Length: 126
Image 1 (cartoon, one colour):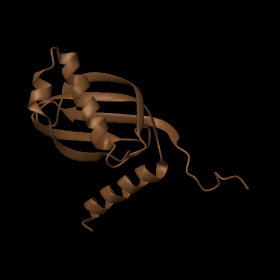
Image 2 (cartoon, rainbow, N blue to C red):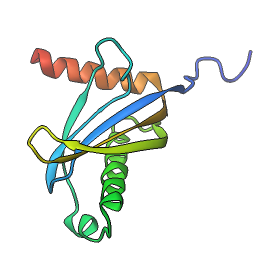
Image 3 (cartoon, rainbow, N blue to C red):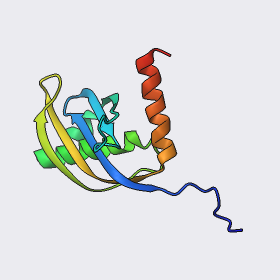
Image 4 (cartoon, one colour):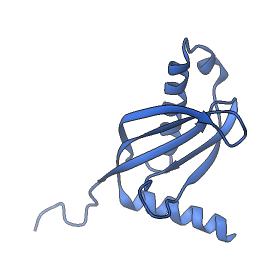
């Protein structure tokens, strides 16, 4: 028998991240954007003003916001590996600027399933 039996293998998928460009803002993400009813996880995050203030262009600010968001997501999904993100600005839910990033993601399905269960429990009030 191989020593790898029972070891979960990462899946290749996609990620969409929406992050408000505000000192304290909403960050939302999903790892199943193509699902009929994608599950979105929302987190209130605070940005480091010194880091954001050091950005020399809107593009650099967007990159910092998205990279910080990926690191935040990795707290719940440690296996997350993201590559080739495309970014675009939008108007956010509170009329703030918002960055929407999308691209390829590789992760353990069990970690995403745990995040989905947690989100469903919050909705159900459990």
